[in-house]
Image 1 (spheres, one colour):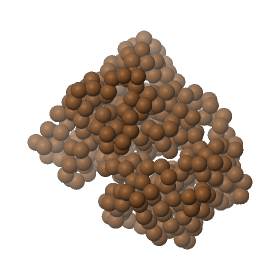
Image 2 (cartoon, helix red, strand yellow):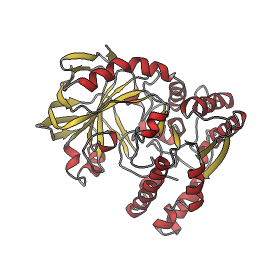
Image 3 (cartoon, rainbow, N blue to C red):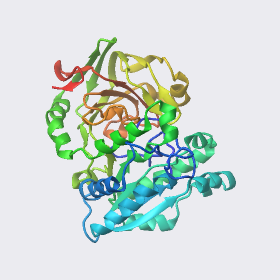
Image 4 (cartoon, rainbow, N blue to C red):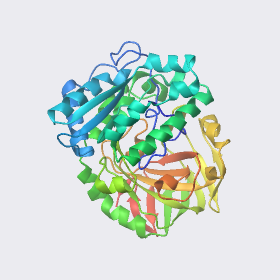
Length: 410
């Protein structure tokens, strides 16, 4: 299965409105990650079989809380089969019953070339039946070759979205706990596209996935309380950022990498790994000032840098980029009125994240400002568009009291 969705960051993190594609990067061919033909580079960044086993045990037991006798579905693509095998073995060791779903890279794209869009994208009754009987779901995202994915006709991606909406509703209806593993996104083509070192990316994603959720809960406690009670946030940075945004009493959401009973009751079935951030929906009618991004915003179609957004009376009235304006406008210009509204604010909590693509919003102290829809985060703005700007080293105040200073939690 693959989801298309809007070209936003590694969201939706809380109660996703669609089943996410890959982590939004690029991948090459049918070959597994061997360092030949676009797979993972070998070396100090490669995840060993023992490390995959450790990660699998952590995800199955800690993130999803699966117990002996329960069932888990492990969905993988060609490039992530070593990880899927480790998850299956570890599941059996824990007494959990695994079912592995495999999507081949070559077969996926050939299906979209030879079959009708609805037939190529369709999820069958057998998969929905398995989903209804599952307690957990581990997703190792794909496809690997996002150049080919981007080249799919719009009608094919639309068909994918329709089926993914059904899949997502089934996940919530049956209270299935889902873990989405960003580490499977770290591939050679993605690293080349975004100009990062693949070995470092994989190592960073692995280490960040193992951070104890209790540390996130401890660090977020005061932050959540302040955001829940506050009326206004002010974001400043020496780079010219000075932005006032409104809070509307929405409950902040902590993504700590686990799915607990309360999460299931509230429709948040997903654990995103690596984890570590607090997000809160904003008053979509308040927003004045300028925000200047100093970290790249990475999308499936490429990276945006040097973002400068100007807000007035709760609307985005001007935008500029050093690079990537066309990527932003590809979805912005066709969106509805939600595109100009402040959506939500996110504060990173993970001390192990620094440069990994699609994870930078989780870096400790990084602040991310989103525009567009926020109804899936507890807000009231509906639509399909969402985009974001990342700021490292900023000061964030709630009702004039700092909660982040120079990129560090206060």
